[in-house]
Image 1 (cartoon, helix red, strand yellow):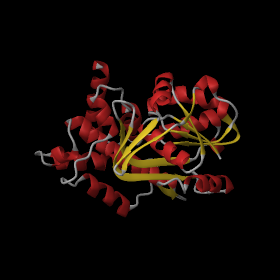
Image 2 (image 1 turned 120 degrees about the vertical axis):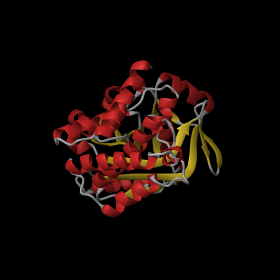
Image 3 (image 1 turned 180 degrees about the vertical axis):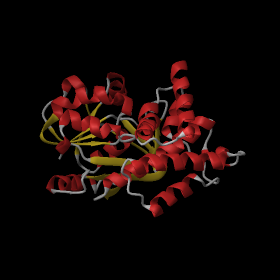
Length: 304
């Protein structure tokens, strides 16, 4: 299977590297700065098990040739419009596109551009970041990759994807209910991002602060009400696990949005929080805590 990994940041770099190490034909589509960095130093993975370096197969938008069987999109959500332009020449009649982005807005955007039959569901669970020299740093052993047809019908095309991905040295989950997985991932990451960005700290600091637990539970409840109104079929055991994970004061957690914010980077405010508010408005839901988070993030973006 010919695979194009759109992006070689922490997510794309890690999972793309594992696919390449498993013998898959993987090309990383990257910008000029990242291209030069990877050409000079290789793709470096720093994992709990040690450091690995591989020489990746690279391409830039103007050098893409031929169609790909699978395009995995791993950029930040605010870069999606440009990436769609970049990958368009690589999309053929049989190409499947698997976005691994935060939120859900990107699915409709990709479907409108390339067709509903080309977009499949995907998400990952990994604690990873890029180091100062562009190395991919996996902070914990967690490295799960979920994928499946958005309508739950995993046909022969999806079976081919599973055959390519399942032996790539990561924990793969071929799901026949990927939409619920996507809703639950959004519930987790948006709650985490909201409370960390609003309180400017990790969950341990928040939960051990006066009113911190109430803040987290309040944000969680507002988000759960929104996604349920939007079509999420609540799985009580799954949502309870998410709340339990977030509410453990012994385990300090932060979100990628919070880490980007503390470094002065652009953030996925509209895609992670703003889209929830639009959906809440559609159902006339009161979400005062989410509104406070959104104002906070907008002010940050104005001040960048």
